[in-house]
Image (cartoon, rainbow, N blue to C red; front, side):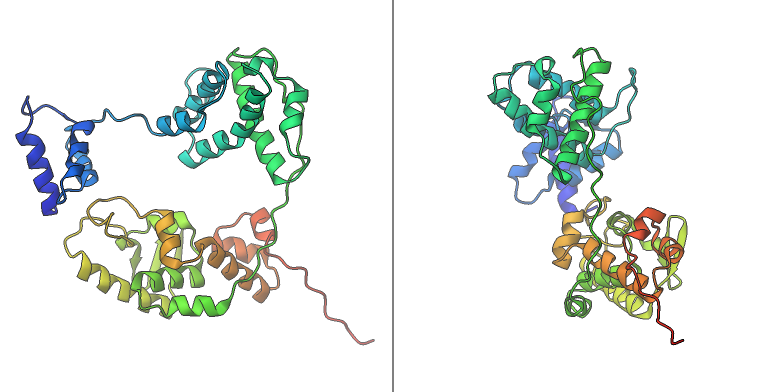
Length: 341
């Protein structure tokens, strides 16, 4: 355990009024004023030993209140009922599972423009909204219309099931399904530069994606034990690593050991923030390290495989874990070879 974490815990224990009692997260937050202590590792250790009383505001709550500031009441309160069900799930019919943070944020952000427009028009409650009001705030077509309508339908459907509103104004409204664009190749010189980068983390990340195209979530979840015997072990599949990938991973492991020899983090990729914890790196860290979206490199790799195999959907699905529909995005129509008769 790093010395700064030990010092932080000792300070908290020494200032306790009731020794042995759980320590509140709000009290631990005071350590941030000290230049030699990082708060999050202290919280992680306290939580692991059952000594943390997490009295911080619920995740996303402050974000939701700030994002919906200025909405009319009770419209804001009605929307919050739906937001809490997305965030926490519900055991009351209709039962729902908690959604991912990114999904909750997306849902709220896509309905907020409509709510603000209705507030500006003088509406106080979602009970007042009609089908015509919904049509007025929707784009004529395209992906923005589809996203907004999907979230509004979720909002009104849920509130009607809870008898918060009496009529679902978005019922029977449909948006045309927006087809995802065909992936485009990226500049290969950029990929070569990243592969030959002097930064071992950048080179290793690029090599893994450019040769084997794992997803962001798979990259973040990779453990040291998932790379062994020249193979990468992912959930449900085993990938034989290309020689250039093995060389760059070995270079990264040397750098990792040099910089953080005593880290307890078992993930393959770590940084200065996660080295003192046990959590994975974030997607923004991967993007920042690469200087380009990892998804762009992954799509370029799959596209090249599609071209090399003349659009073999089965092969793309097996190699990259794609569904049939997902693999078809990478299939470029190939003209049959003409024959001389």
